[in-house]
Length: 289
Length: 289
Image (cartoon, rainbow over all chains, first blue to last red; front, side):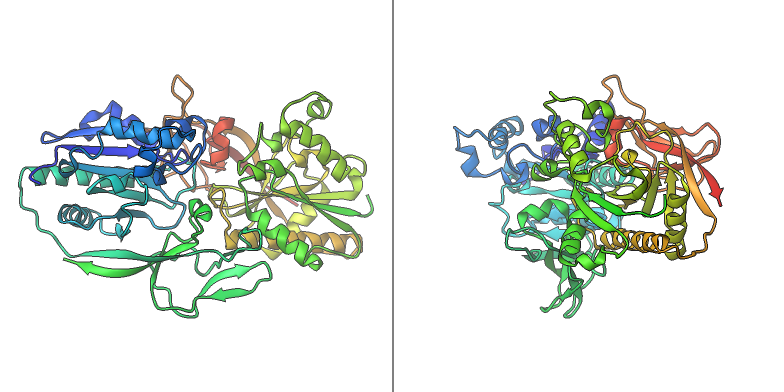
């Protein structure tokens, strides 16, 4: 890899995450905000049908649909499976993997402020993240390993990341979240331009939260959630979870405690993970040079 | 009116407000939490089909459907219009208006903590509210006048109120919001029991926010929202809004200011009001003895 030739900025993969709507209008009206000399920028609205239907997705989660299996499924009746093939063509995915960088915009209801997710801890990704953290101190970074076959759009790329901005309710425009997302995009685009121009930029150590495993809500016999996140645990993303800390509360007002090793929880009580059997993820903190 | 004979507790009027789900399970398992000696308690799940479809509503807002017109519409294909007739029967609405009290549970994405809405400032309602405020200091009260023909379930009753608990994202179980809602219900049921038993309870002055008018988002030619609530204004419910305070921001980063008389904003950026052409409501504060 010598140069990045295209940066892809994707959003509205989930029809109920509106931050992208505001930013895409802004970028289309003010293209100078995302245009650089050394590479092209492509903006893409990933799930337009979900948007029209005012729902998160039509038939299945778009951001779990980018798999080889779906790409080869020529007879599917599922909107997202067919949309994957279109997106592959529109973005020319996989043809120039060494020369492309993706920024995929999302939001979360979990209290995580602005978080970046990478699935590949390669040098360029880490350099971009180090640069972003030098500009915006409190941005947290999550490394979601083994996600190559996860079906996210990010899994189709070598370079790039997901922005998870929050906390924000679904179907809401929130000025602060829009601004924070825009700032991450700005610094990323700036860094890639400097990288292409071979400008030397000092890299600092970066702190990364590596996902170890997911923890589900206790469920009743019909698999409905019947216990909720304990209020002492709600919003405590990135704060160390220790043995005997309360994590769930039942309808009998009983409290369920954590009984395992010290780890850092993330995505606590994210509503879109209810259907994915996830109450929160546990991570390990690592420092990478 | 001498006695309240039945208290109706309704929830899940909107399929994406889950607080009720947790509480209904709790009340069904622990009926002593809502049972009193001097009156009966009836729990009702208002929009089960929206719940099954995992959406806010099926064809139209259930909480704008309780109108005489809908009640007389015998050929409607709209689920909510037909459901109104069932709810009328199940609750026996309108037959014993002097002897019934309703508590209708809702949640909001706006930063209003626990808020109570009344449409009728009669003596019993004000007494209950005064009692609740003596137990939970920071509960705010909103008076929504002229809502008799609004189609809310509350508009079918003389006595009772709506709980709007938040801020909470839609489709989320949140322990604190569940607890706050449960506490309001508990104190209301306690007060009504004391009232029926003719126990003397001292009433204090109460502060009420009377809705004056709604303010919509600026819209583009296709009526889409193209400006968002300014981040200096977001979350500032119940804080006085003064001339020249910033209220909106455009995609050009222009700021729109407020230019009218001092009033108190509520429901700022509530997502379910986007489709109702409401960015926020303006209220006047009044003290009632």
